[in-house]
Image 1 (cartoon, rainbow, N blue to C red):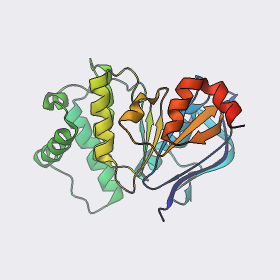
Image 2 (image 1 turned 135 degrees about the vertical axis):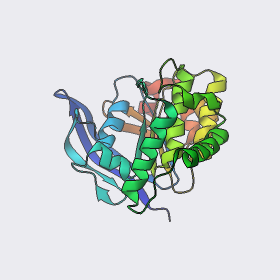
Image 3 (image 1 turned 90 degrees about the vertical axis):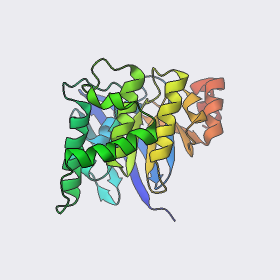
Image 4 (image 1 turned 45 degrees about the horizontal axis):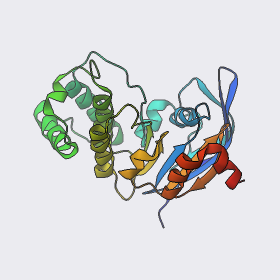
Length: 254
């Protein structure tokens, strides 16, 4: 039986003295894809930020267990090293060439995981990066530009998926990875996720729309409202949500 990757127990969290998460419970096993939907302000992005350890989000009650360990006071970087990955809804622009940036984070990540890891030269890393770019069907010119500077919404999301492919996390948290994408970009990003995911990787996907679930085969769909999960179902449940709305679904599952 697949092991439990993430176990969130009675999680309460706040930001700027405002309580946002109010007793949330969630369990994700290896290989599972969980999708969280819900109205604006329900706490979806707060959940991801709290799991990743953003310092502005304070846990007031409950526990986060990842791969059998309590995250507790673990820093953001330590959580990343331990296999958590978060793709941002609004990735920032940084004046560094994409290829250089990716080589730096890849080598740093691998060295921490394995002290005997030999830093990849520019040539060797370019070979690895070319393989990932080819798999994800990303234009090679992409890696010679500065990180996210002048990128379209679709290009920024592709960049997030490329980082995910290189780091190969245990649990990937994708915050509205489909927002602002046209149909073609949505297919590219979704196919990228499908190619990267293996039997042991878990995915926690936050979205407002069920259209991405045409391309990513989710196992569970959860509805968040007022800081906790109020209903859950399978992939078909997402279609019901769009048709009946969140109020109706909550009544049906009360």
